[in-house]
Length: 123
Image (cartoon, rainbow, N blue to C red):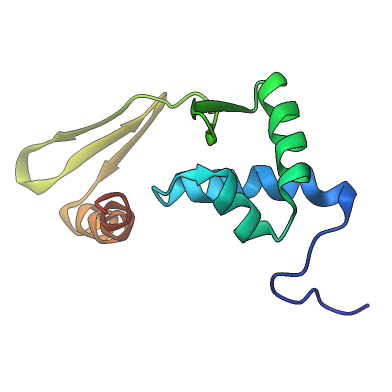
């Protein structure tokens, strides 16, 4: 089996998942998922993109923000997140029902790991 070449059109049966994943990826990188961008990113025709976008909209997977602009509908509800700073530099990180006590060193490591994601969303 050969590897798919970049910009090679996916088989018709794979077009829907490809379009949905492209919309999700664009949304996650703070870019608009327009008809034109979807055609350029997937290599599919406008007719195929329009057909799948209409179906996904009817199924509640995506919504139209403006004419020709789409975004995914969150399928998973976010949990509450909080950080409580404790004496001696420790902290409690709470995500939904999960509670983790962090030392000051662990808190710094988490901050460094999350810092990269924060830079992506700052664009």
